[in-house]
Image (tube, rainbow, N blue to C red; front, side, top):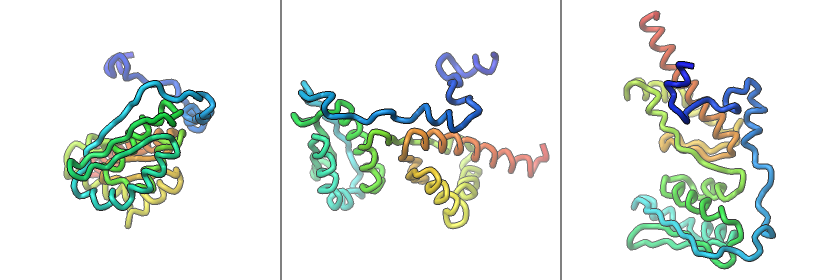
Amino acid sequence: MEELKSLGKHNKPKPWDVDPDMERCLERWAVEKKFDPTWNPTGMLEVSSFSRVYPQRREKHLLKCWPRVKSALKEHGVSCELNLVERYMTVSTTKKTRDPYIIVKARDLLRLLSRSVPARQALKILEDDMSYDIINIGRLAPSKEKFLITRVLFLGHKSSSLKTLETSTNCFIRLQLQTLLGTYQALTLIGKMADICFLCMIGFKRWKHTGV
């Protein structure tokens, strides 16, 4: 009880987080049904839009991939604009928009593109069962020096450990940007693995040097 009180009112272990059966735990995050346009035949009543500023270094890549991005959003009834003068991207709903949540997905797409995620990977966020997460793994280490050492161990030789994790979870991982892209189940699993791996590695190195 003391441990739960120290976590705060809302930051308490959820039933699906403490379930000993990991597979059953992850199934709770599965998307049961994908959106059907017939659920909203009349479309949106109001126009919704989001804008996102991008760094100058991303301009060349965005120019190259923008036709592909525009085509993918058009399939969902969403319009997009790339402003090269003020360096920002905008997405807006149209009369052809049927899915009310697609504008939120389009907003997430802009954020991923601005964070240097390749367009072919970022476009997966438009799928119903896909999401993204930003994990600040730097908070898991007591100092920058220990974080860098642990990060190298986590990556493995020539990023072999990271590639294995991507393959086994079918999730896109950009460690230097602390960005994950995948299904809800994969994001939940990798988030737990990152916490466990970094904390265990740091704890092991401390025990190795101090013996405590």
